[in-house]
Length: 446
Image 1 (tube, rainbow, N blue to C red):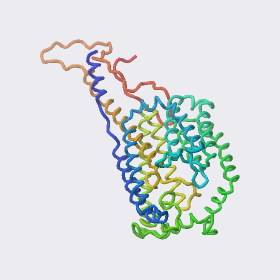
Image 2 (spheres, one colour; image 1 turned 90 degrees about the vertical axis):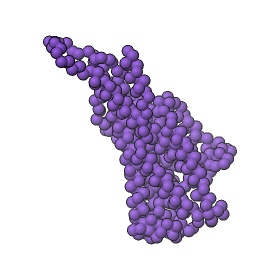
Image 3 (cartoon, one colour; image 1 turned 45 degrees about the vertical axis):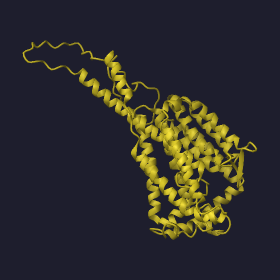
Image 4 (spheres, rainbow, N blue to C red; image 1 turned 90 degrees about the horizontal axis):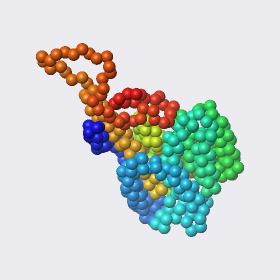
């Protein structure tokens, strides 16, 4: 008993390590974002009369605050976050409805998406993305078997997502609505949902989204201008045509940092939605490849961490990692695709690079949560290794001393010297589409 207590104490004292690749990739993207916001925001600040370095200083301040929030998330145990996950869904709806309260909500360019905090405006949907991912991760952990086997458990998160989308469309925000639906579908697939059963809701939702696009004239104009932006380069195709000209001017290695012409009052939202076009012009094809590689590395690493967590039956942590990877991966893909003329304009920023307080803050918090997942994964691995190393010598037979009388071997199974509580339950609840891993067990077998 005393040995077991000492062993448990030693295991609890083990600490993990934060994933160095995540820190390096996120840091590289954040540094690149500071450089490009400083370059693209100069002319925007001059034209708006707020000063050359207004957007740069604002971006740096939000990045510093975001890093602080990320560090706070890194120090918050996942168990604590999971315990409060039920309240996070309520917080999602509250945040999306607050924007309609006079005095608190603020309308910009005809869209009511911002909450007036006095010193700054906060876009509610940016917080909703993270809160919803955490709630959905908790739901998939608790009901993984039901999600795989029954219609009701699968349709519940889809119903929640549709309710959030309806609230978002009242603002309106079609880009974030599509992103939330894509994240939901991706997490359900990774959570083990029955794929043939998943096709039914998809076949219903896709025509509904198409109808939403067709019924709104401005969305249809975006589609038509995307198909041929130079048909009306000074009207509906103005944004995309200038973005494509910026991309074309960049060629292989760009015109040089700070030398963009399109950002000089030609390219709208050069420091936010279309900052990738400025990168393409100033840094060229090489710069675009660098940005794509950094995002691919970050998203791939997040998926790998999620896979390792699920294999160790740490389902909540794994699904959180999957959700954050889907969020950053899909949003960066759409933003880059819009800037390169591959997708219609959606109004989504490029995570960690575009100027924007809400996006920077919540992306930093999401990365802080992802780093916490990597920390607890590494700690669990170290605990398993320590327990395995402590138990195996205790179970080994002691060597016979010289001159000792050899005893007849017994047919009864050897009893272990001490029992150690398994770190991971052998029959943890929940299933996954991923191949299950046989976990090591220690102590007396049943």
